[in-house]
Image (tube, rainbow, N blue to C red):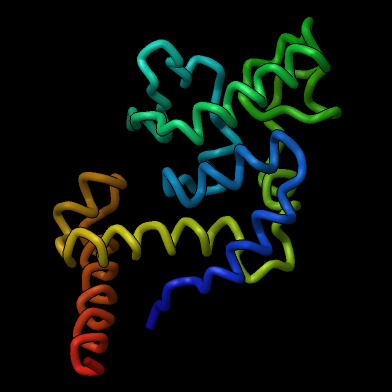
Length: 170
């Protein structure tokens, strides 16, 4: 059964994210439940900074203060390092700045490789946290994260079991 991550596990991953790209990537998984495969395909056009929106996998999501700050930091870094790049991907690295292809899953995941709180585990933890905070409602989870019905029901079942377990202990 899924268990929430311990704060110390999350703290170690946060400490490992030392670049503007790594900090942004780290925020996208737990805050927006973005999969690595979706993160590496984000384009500059997916950002609507004026309206504080970010489109991930076709779903527009509101930008919280933390993600907005990290996005602006990353865009400033990008402007300083490669102002003339034609690459329209949000996340680029030294190799992809002179091309138009994406940075790739391997590069995106590299910072947290070997950590307990990987990007995938942080994404899962975020969805579980939502189910615990708002009740084990699969419709709510499907709406918030764009989950399929089976996946939403699985998270709701995990949350229900954790909530029942906590109630039994008290």
